[in-house]
Each structure stands twice: as structure tokens, then as C-alpha cells.
Length: 323
Image (cartoon, rainbow, N blue to C red; front, side, top):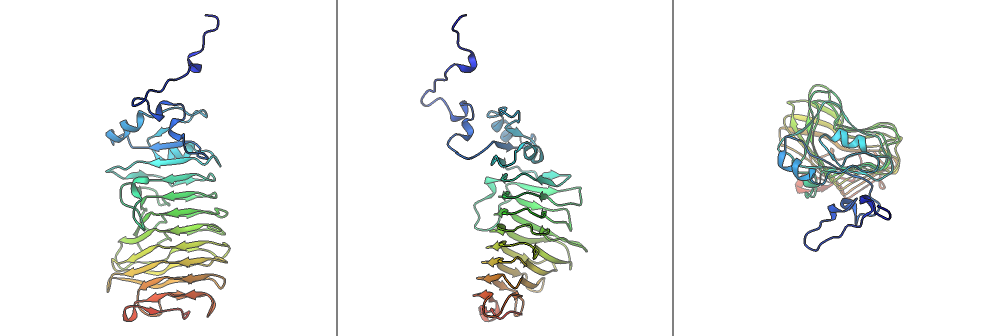
């Protein structure tokens, strides 16, 4: 019919109390300026949740789907620098992996909102486990990537998160890292080269031993010297199960900041030999260790690099003298 309006161009009339934002094209991201595509992940075995988010499923203009059944699939759909979000929904079961999750596109956010709410760490609402591959849970290889809200279960002896060189400005926060150690162990967060520069390698996370018996790990959070401006702040570390962490945090970054971290051991059943090792151009302040004398700070420059760090002697003794 001449003058007819195509169905795709006809106006949509919203009705008060009936219409939803999700009824509109791109309605789920309306009101969030600067946000790219938002992808949702739920496992099909979690029927109620999966059916709930499927009612919002749609195809984006680039051909990608809003709803995914695996985290890897959703990450694959993201686009570099579009500021995409991958939101993972809670489940009674783990999100089991057979390979590392690849985060190789700048400014992608991988988050589990249901896991957040603690001052430090995450609940177990969204558990990701590396079940069969002797590799990391996540492999980061680009800049400005966010990971938050997850309960991470590694393949025994392997890292939870690795960061490749030039992975600048990470934002790894509010996650729980369960430590599962054997006779040979990698750092929970392992940076290579200058990875972690200009960002928060670890902030407001919880690192706690869960498995192992009289095992040793050399470093839990490891930032090498080539990095600049890397921060490791406001994390909890708790070692038990007969295990020993030789170093909890090794932040050798130039202009590195290590502050507000708390270190704990199960008396007689856990050891942290040195809580913080820093470079000559780093600073450590406001860290506390229930770990005994001479175990809190190593490295740095006397009378400059350490402020208000306390060990557990006599209920709290300043430990700013550098070992």
C-alpha cells in the first residue's frame, strides 16, 4: 500500500504500569551512557534463572546474542574498547572450566553482582572452577580489564589469574581466591613483565587457604619490577592447613603502593614468612600482620618506604623498621 510504514519503523506506544524498559530496542542499556553491549550468562541447568533472563534475550546489531550459557562464549562476543559488560548470574553449581577464560580486549568488565557486598572478598554466589586443565582460571592480556564478584577455585597448584606483559591498569577487586596447594605452586595473581602497571592488581580481595597439607607457595600476589604504579591494597590473607606462604605480596613496581592489607595465620597451622616485599621505589603503609616479629615488611628505603605497619607483638607493635 502506498505510504504504508514498515513494521520496523512504526512507533511503539508505551503504557503506564504495563510497558518495561526491556520492551524498547536496547532498553536494557538505556540510562547507562558510555556502556557497550551487556551480556548475561546463566547455565541451562539453572532453569529458573535461565528462563528469567531468556525473556530479555535479543540479537545486537553486531549479530551477538544478549544471553549466553558459558562465560567463555560471552567474553568471545565482547568488542575491544566498546566498554562491554559480561554479567554472570548465581548458581548452586560451579561454572566449570576446561580452559582458561581469555580476557584479551581492552575495557571489558567481567562481574558477578550477586557476589559483591563484602568489604573484602566475594560470596560464593558465583563459583568458577578450573576442573580439568592445569592452567589459570583467567588469562588477562589487555588493559583496563575489570574482574569482580567471583569465588575462584583454581586447578590445584595453578594461578587463579595471570596477567601478560602490557596488561596495564587492571581492576581486580572483591573476589575470593581459595588457595589449593600441592608440592609446586604458582602465585594466585601472577603478573609477567610490566603487567599490572598503572592499576589495581588486587584490591579488596580475600585470599584464604582451602587445601594442602604442609605445602609451600613462594608468592601469592606477584608484581615484577618492570611494572610502574601498581597497587595492591586492602586485601585479606589467611593461611592455615599446615601451609606456608613464603611471601604474601611481592610488589616490586616502581612507584608501587602496598597499603591497608591484613595478614593472618592459623596459630600453629599456618605461616607467612614475609607479608610484603617491596622495591626500593615502593611504599608500604597501614598494613597489619598477625604473624609475629620480623615478618611484615622487607625492602624499600629506611625512614621513607614504610609508615604505620603493625605486627602482632604485644597486641600491635609498629614494624616500620625494614628487614
